[in-house]
Length: 70
Image (cartoon, rainbow, N blue to C red):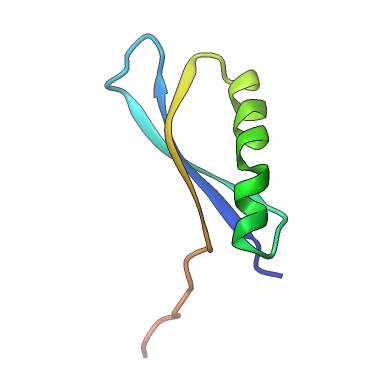
């Protein structure tokens, strides 16, 4: 199972110029399912991190590890 990630940018409410890129692994196999559960997952994350504001988000597949060339 690969799953999809919910990628988002969270900024401190007290300092809007201080932002972090975050990601949450979602237990879904299709992009449309990721979109369906993204907002409730973000709401849950914001509820446990009230000092942040989410300014943008997207769903995406995890990056592929191409390994090392020897």
